[in-house]
Amino acid sequence: MIKSFKLTVFILVLLLAQVYFGIFLASAKQGFTIFPAKLSLTVDKGQIHNDEIQVTNAGDSVVAVLPDVQDLVTASGASGFNFMPKAPGITSLVDWIQISRKPFELKPNETKAVPFTIKVPSDASPGSRFAVLFFATGALSGGGQLNVSARTGSVILLTVPGDFKQIGEISNFILSKFVWNNQPTGFKFDFLNTGTVYFEPKGTITITNIWGKKVAEIPVAGQVVLPTGMRSINTVWEKPGFLLGIYKAHLAINITGKGDIATKNARFYALPLYPSLGALGILLILIVV
Image (cartoon, rainbow, N blue to C red; front, side, top):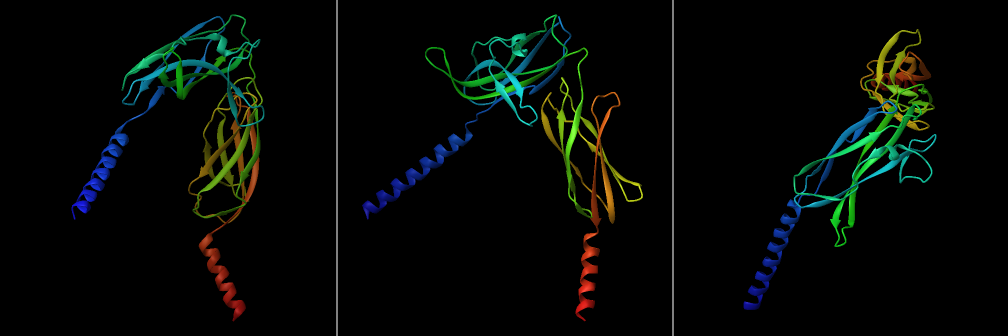
């Protein structure tokens, strides 16, 4: 009896300990944020731009932070990109950015403004360059080295004004061949930036029926596409309404900001779902009878 009681007490203590430590661990906050996550800058050659990144320790313990700068390199003809350390013998935006690379500590809920400077050479060629200001977090070792546990970064999109080339092309305009009424319909296309600067292609998809009458116009929001890079862009026609017959989707994207338009066309067929099912049911009944 006594042994059974002791065993029960022991189990209850273990359960209470698990609950206690579980709550304690769950309440421990960890987090590190930066602002802004992206900076789009235009700086003339020979000029200096001063700016700062706000870094915040949203956790409940002290963290060490180590700033760094790396190149952002696009994968030619593809939608991906890579972060790369400075390549020897090649001048890039990393060479123009000055920032302290010494580690510092942030207390819980502390925010620090990290200043940096961009010095654009007087002989810089027009066009866009890209880099990432990384902030690695972790714990400092006895030798002052940072044991990195995570990192986050702010993307720098820098354009040097001048006679640069802003142009691109549309490929792979894809949509469903059959559209049912009142069902959201998705459109997807790939946009290839064949110029020397990044930009955000914006435009519209105009839907017309077989007689050329406009049925709808769907805006296409801009998304950043880097030079030589490709990006898949999606947009949705939320409420097509009543449709019946053959329709044309005309995609028009402003590629230069000066009236130059890239276009692509696609056709699809539309049927009212429930009336079509009803008509099919009646037809089957007539055939059977």
